[in-house]
Image 1 (cartoon, helix red, strand yellow):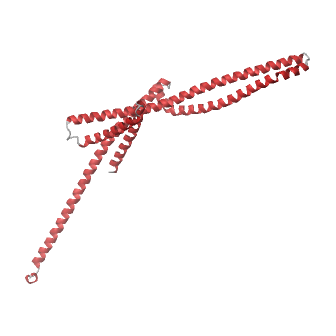
Image 2 (cartoon, helix red, strand yellow; image 1 turned 180 degrees about the vertical axis):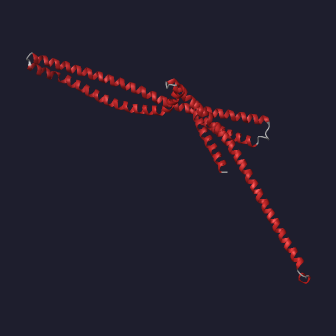
Image 3 (spheres, helix red, strand yellow; image 1 turned 90 degrees about the horizontal axis):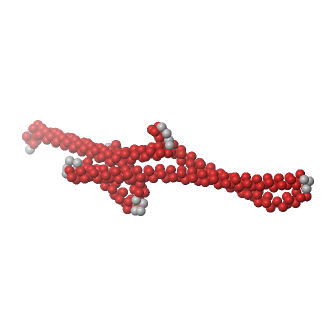
Length: 288
């Protein structure tokens, strides 16, 4: 009995999860009508399970037309649920791939910004070098006073160039930190996709993007193939187990009733025999 109830609970749990995934997948396909799709998914999933259980119990009594329609309806509903699950899993994979692609694009953009900032630093440093070279010429000619005056005249330009270098350096440090964070997230996503890469390499011999997508598609198809059909078959198995357990229970109750009836009849017979024996053994005067 415990196994029968466990089978039933497992079937209902798998069916509930399948319905949830299917509804999310169908909502992703028909995103303009979220609530109607959700209501339809719940009702159809319930109808599918009830139809499968009803067919099992009344298989010998129902006519062929109704039997054919209900079987077709259950199969079609299983296909719809599987399609929704496929949409849900595909959506999850696409979102994961999109996040990874977005991180890659952001990292490329950051690299480009860092490259521009480095060029700004190089230009500013080159300009400072030219200013220093100009002062060196004055020193070489012995015009120290002119060198000092030129240095004062360069002060504003030098400060601007130094400020440019400092700002660019700070920007590079901030961009590098952001790049590190994005790279860390990208590595985490790559680690999550790692098992699929191993599957792709095992089956196809490489882990290129197209091969990886095909491997993911086949994994999703395998999951879909066993998900909802397993729920329906477990439900039928649970009905079979419960029916057998109920038959055994009724049989045991019948045996117990027959045993109690025989015991009562035997006790009644013994009582009647004892009374008869008493009447036969007692003297006639005692009986009067």
